[in-house]
View (cartoon, rainbow, N blue to C red):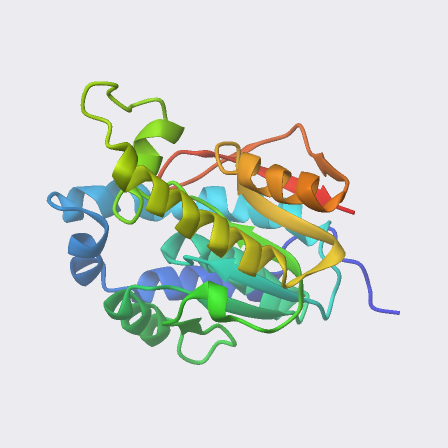
Length: 232
């Protein structure tokens, strides 16, 4: 029986620090910001490590060694989690990202470590997993602008375009269904409070019980509250 970890190990912490030190923040700036990329990473670089480590400490208690995770829209903020999963728990982590340039930058920084980002749609993944990471994806203002505005309470009733909203709603529902269909029940979902309604709705339609932990964690790049949902 595998030893159950209670904290993030030395190897994962060392890997996290080395990867963050290698990252090309000048090239990451335009990917994350329209302007002010240097200032953004000056403020977020340390925060991503501290908040990511805090969440990794919570997940290391809840994930079983040798399992598998699917990360939807994984980027810089997910590095501490991926380091913990692959190095401490020897888990397999499929980290999907639709931004090809970011994937290249991330993989270059992760060289020598068992962490790899994939330029692919997470909905196309066929592997079975016991943990799904779905954080600040379904409300992405770039990919789903109308849905994002409604979710965050910023939608203007005068200018809100329902015709654009409906296709975005269908796209999100399809992505949620494809990703959650890969989850072994019982399983764990890490998501945001705003996105949790999609997971809850998916469970309701299938008669699957779920429980959401009361504790939340701050997302380092977006600031959304992250919660943990146990399905089944």
